[in-house]
Amino acid sequence: MLNKIKSLNLFLKAFVISSLFSLLLYVLMIPLLIFDLGYIPNGLILGEFESFIFLFVIGLVEERKPNNSIILIVLMTIRLTLGIGVCILSAFLWYKLDVKIFNIFATMSGYFIPTIILLITAIISDKRKGVNSNV
Image (spheres, one colour):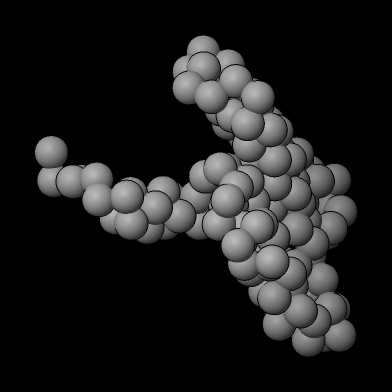
């Protein structure tokens, strides 16, 4: 199983690692559901789900057409736009409609967790390949 994960490209590897990390984080937040603070884990899952979709799609595109920067730029722009839209939606639900389903700060945190894991995965894979990051 570990060899299968190592053979994936950078985006799919980050997708798998961030999925496992987010599942663990959500399990640790179960007490918040018990104490009626479910909007925090729900916001986290909403932001992470949006990031997961694009990590997976970008990973599949990279598998089929490696080093196609135009497609990656378009997908990252759509991801950023959708992330902003999701944060605006959660803020609108929270502050205007008083529907306490998603916390905007948890949604933004959930959006950035897979991105941070992607960056860490990229740094680790560059170090293993021997790429000099000081240039």
